[in-house]
Length: 162
Ligand code: 5GP
Ligand code: ZN
Image 1 (cartoon, protein in one colour):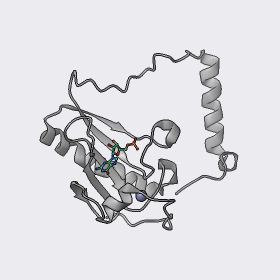
Image 2 (tube, helix red, strand yellow):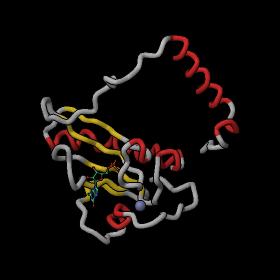
Image 3 (cartoon, protein in one colour):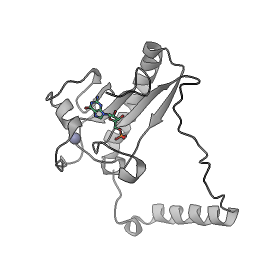
Image 4 (cartoon, helix red, strand yellow):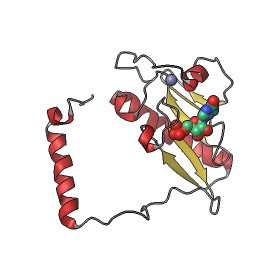
């Protein structure tokens, strides 16, 4: 069992997932423990589309304590074979839309587990067709910048989390 390590972050405004977690609205739960819950998406890409959420309200991945974020991925790993068997879908997309610009609509952190079948019409297409191809110097430059941010927590706004 996982114990929360960070103080509770207050929710800003109304949150539909907090309502579901607190039993204030209908939800089909397939997993729960002390800190995590998983339920069926109300508008599934395919049958068996599950959302894994923390019980506490955190908006985006980087807001979460590392232990809780890791726990949610452990829950996802436990759920995936069960979802595949129950849905009969052979493959799965694990998706996190972290932040509005990344397509997050419900601002309570969640991991999508999306069962996939050949020809189901859903598409998260990578590589992105509209990408500009950077040269090696540009790729190396970005890799070096990221590496230096990792070595210098102050340069990234003291966002280091344990
Ligand atoms: P996002 O775009 O934030 O990554 O995804 C939000 C997901 O939450 C969508 O797939 C949407 O169908 C699902 N969703 C939104 N409202 C509800 C709800 O009231 N109940 C459930 N079970 N899922 C919801
Ligand atoms: Zn919430």
